[in-house]
Length: 317
Ligand SMILES: C[S@@+](CC[C@H](N)C(=O)[O-])C[C@H]1O[C@@H](n2cnc3c(N)ncnc32)[C@H](O)[C@@H]1O
Image (cartoon, rainbow, N blue to C red; front, side):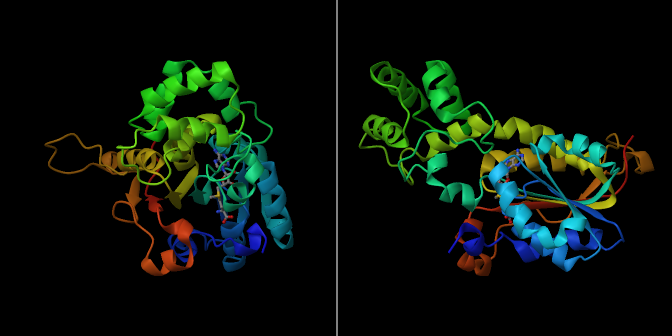
């Protein structure tokens, strides 16, 4: 089976259900900010025959796969190679003012994980690449060769939440003097040798270091920090956003932005809430919604997912 055939879009029915009410108006525009293999996109275009879809991905391979899959809907799709914090520029280029719905299905796709040579997986030997956009400059190899020990320590702490960050950073710097780290097997070897036997790890010892490198290579968190507010600004009143996050660092960013924009701005003690203080957004689910047991049973990728959703209530100047 190919990656496309075996891929099941995460929480598909739930995303259709949450975004659906915003997509019924003729000409409604949906942004799929993380097109991937076009699984969610195909389902939305099929279920809502009058929408136009703007699909973004930073991965040219993903765009080629999604482009072929969505060819039957070519008259209602615009597929764009870009990083998703460029949503305002993409809409301006297409002459689109506001949109009815936005979907973010964050992280790497199963196709990217399946392509061993792209180096996303610690469990298979591959070049230390990890670029979602194969045309970009920074690779994991470059980071391991060029970052100072303190910079490595910082990214392992911040992006991997790795307690052994100082130890791993120091061992990497010692090792790279002897030989450049170019393959994931070499990095695994350094990490495994540096992990004290007494330290109990959940999962592979290098899991967090790989996560940290991937986040740094793709600047995932800083891009998301810019993208979520820009996406919220692009929604029409009544428009809806759904975000599927797979790790807590990303979910925290989404949670913080949505919470701030769904709060009343009325000063404390005011007896009534004036219209200009009403929240800009209403949250559509309480907290972060987890995948159902049925969803997890058919799709193991849904296990860590945290879904958040909101509807725009009014425009704030
Ligand atoms: C989990 S997959 C999406 C799968 C898709 N929903 C489907 O059903 O096929 C995430 C996709 O988002 C892309 N991506 C991740 N971060 C991105 C960013 N900052 N800008 C644009 N695309 C990004 C990845 O390249 C990947 O193809």
